[in-house]
Amino acid sequence: MIPAEFDYAVADSVEDAIQRLGQGGEDAKLLAGGHSLLPLMKLRLAAPSLLIDLRNVQGLSGIERANGGFRIGPMTRHAELAASGELHGAVTAAAQSIADQQVRNRGTIGGSLAHGDPASDLPAVMLAFEGTLSVQGPSGSRDIAASDMFQDYLTTALEPTEVITSISIPALDGYGYGYEKFARRAADWAMVGVVALVKSNGGTCEDVRIGLTHMGSTPLRATAAEEALRGQSLSPESIASAAEQAAEGTDPPADLNATQEYKRHLARVLTRRALDAAAA
Ligand code: FAD
Image (cartoon, rainbow, N blue to C red; front, side, top):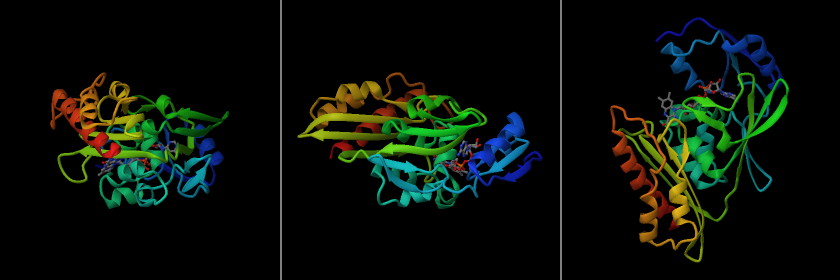
């Protein structure tokens, strides 16, 4: 439970962080809230030689309206998302469901997305919102669509010397939502989580987006269920029928909590509940 020895630096700008990342080589790591990285270091599953703390970098924290949606700083804490009166309810519900108050007070959205854990709550929400990450590296800035971000278990499209500088999501005004998370104990990670976003037009499903947490090595969209519901009536029957397809194309990890088949069953049940709530 004691990490290997490491050096520690506090960056004073994004450029400074990028430069230090470059100098530190592959073993250098950014530090945000530390609530994913430090446990890995304590278990000796990660042993960075240098930690570069982003806490003093101006402009990386906060939520602001931009381009008809929201721009969120990567250092914005889960607690701030959870308490936001402006963000879409799906984002606040997901943030409220993360662990306990202590974790929410330290953990950040940027750290959660960069870590790329398929069991985390916010990555599937980013997928459903079709958000975008702006990142900066030694050769400039670029945008990464959420759909391109999560490549494999704890593996993202981020280069080792890139810093997430902002996260953009559309407002999705007019979309109802449901957020369902099944865990063995209160404040646990999701065994399975589902976010559903539904736009209704006179009782017909104009658009639907469904994000799945912990149903594979990356967060996923339940595209078969989405396609089954789009353009259909939002009746309980058509929602139940679409939700039956929620586990199509998934490969959830079997573990001590549940078999794959049980998790697929959970995905179908939770998707139906999330869609029911979103349609209502
Ligand atoms: P850190 O641990 O500081 O960093 C994580 C990774 O992101 C590191 O590789 C770091 O280098 C990189 N990184 C950080 N910021 C940037 C940036 N701006 N640009 C590029 N790379 C960056 N999460 C959930 O979603 N749901 C839960 O139920 C949940 N339960 C938890 C329970 C416990 C007991 C603990 C300790 C954590 C739990 N978490 C949960 C994880 C928590 O949400 C983490 O805080 C989050 O996943 C990582 O955010 P962080 O700011 O702590 O990142």
